[in-house]
Image (tube, rainbow, N blue to C red; front, top):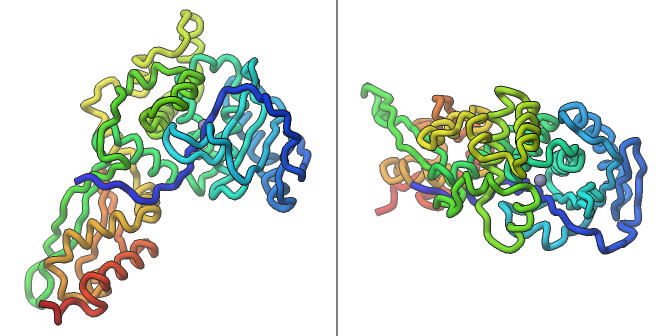
Length: 377
Ligand SMILES: [Zn+2]
């Protein structure tokens, strides 16, 4: 069964190579920090983001091997240019512009973006990449920026990991989760509870991407960003994140940098895809499904349910509802204890996530009435 999550966090951020032909002076408010300048339309927001720049910039420099520190120019915008927001796997909330010499010239962020500190961290990871990173595949660069931003923003990390894993699972047909509940305890004295359930396949797309992963990974940083403006590419944030995470777990970000410098020394324009897959221990596509599934830990599972309550509640009500319709919603939660299990066996009760509890009670009331469907035909 494939599901299309209706409300995954839109945290994808874009990066573009382009000339800055426009010499607009930028938003009116400005705050100068030790690491660059922040411009925005609203004084309070500009000050807030300037504080984050002070905090986040030194951390990116410390975590990123081969960084090229240089003052940042950050603009807070009411909207982002079309080129930054179209295609490429999600709604962009930030973009880093490069000049003709490939020097980052400006970071533009959506002023009212939901997770601006994360997006700022992600864009800084692009802007501070030194020349030794030039051969990095575009998808891996996005994944590495997300990974670094997740390290710097641990409060958001489980939601980011869950989102990126679901996106990556387009290459495996979806993430496998198990829906479980207790049946058979409706009468005292009956043995039970009998645990029963079904597998769910959670996917953002419902279909496998048209482009092979190797083909996607063969696209360098600027190639990827040129092509995404003229054609529909598969979502590369998810697989990029999985690959960056798997390599960094074994060798740190230095392991990714080592791939880039070796490729450069051997005359490759882009790190060969086979090197990336080998470094991530993902050479065998038959192992991807289980590997991706097992990367979704308990915290990520909680985040996935919290961010997509309707999706998983819909599955639970659809599966258990017909046989349990005589119960009221609260009674259903207490007796059946519907829950979601990841591939590692971690379990999260739908009732323990407030958004899921609320979504379930309202869907139940809509289908079966507040006190159950005892009067229904
Ligand atoms: Zn990016």
